[in-house]
Image 1 (cartoon, helix red, strand yellow):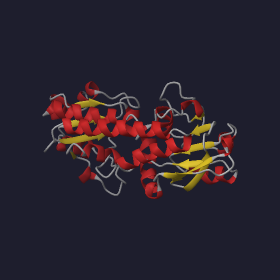
Image 2 (cartoon, helix red, strand yellow):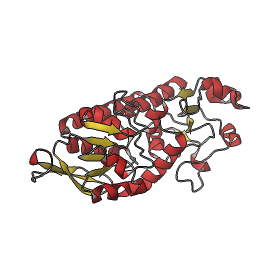
Image 3 (cartoon, rainbow, N blue to C red):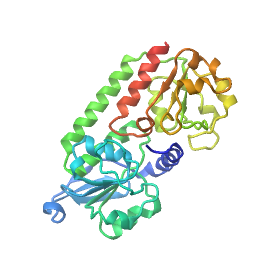
Image 4 (cartoon, rainbow, N blue to C red):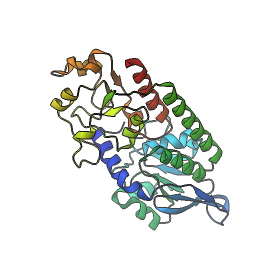
Amino acid sequence: MRPVRSFVAVMAIGAVLAAGACGGGDDGSEKGGSGGKTVTVQAANGAVTVPANPKRIVSLSPTHTETLFAIGAGKQVVAADDYSNYPPNAPRTKLSGFKPNAEAVIAYKPDLVVVSDDLNGIVKALEKVKVPVLFEPAASKLDEVYDEINDLGQATGHTAEATKVVTGMRTTIEQTVAASSKAKGLTYYHELDNQLHSVTSSTFVGQVYGMFGLRNIADEADKASGGYPHLSREYVLKEDPDLIFLADTKCCGQNAAALAKRPGWSVLDAVKNKGVVELDDDIASRWGPRLPEFVKAIGDAVQRVQ
């Protein structure tokens, strides 16, 4: 589980760094690397040449760890960061994605390292010792999600499996949105923590809600906060959202019952009309293969309150 405040920072940083991110790659046949062949993948840190079938992958991103296992590259992952808690059999270690240590990573003798943030200069530090690094930042839109999954598929020798995962995700998400009548006029509040940090429509999470036509109450409260405003209790009560999505059930122990006990919150329409949705913090904060589950939770809520 990723702490909510850290998630806010990561998503904000990722939004800035994503400008040069992603975008497919080219199969290569240069000598060197595993089995003598390599592939070149275009990532945020440029064209990265990696062994065609890397055998020792280190992932410093929970999202990318999920993706690697989803596309069939799980057996190639020798170490994952301390927040990579899914799938349960991921080789979770004490490696940090927030304070990465190049020496600790190198100790695992990786032939490929995957990161979602270039913190502590980890990318250059690893490149300096000739360790291939794929920098795939937090997605800012849906197409980037699919692009990054395909990048990882190409880099690990699982192109076909990655394509299958992307096709399945795309189909499921489109079907879920189509099955849920447009939520015209419905408002929502997405809670990141019990300090009332939220997201605006400009964020990746906000765009997911936007597919259903929901109106975000946090949009007008954003004041140069990079899409992650800190709302006041009075503001939320005044806006009285139709739906409340809790992405702090794990980190902060929040649920519908706890929400109803907050001063003044029991009279909110969402609380009275069963419009409070308890999300899995991890699924709601990661842009990987389980994204369709987040989309379904929104779709089910929209249908329930209309």
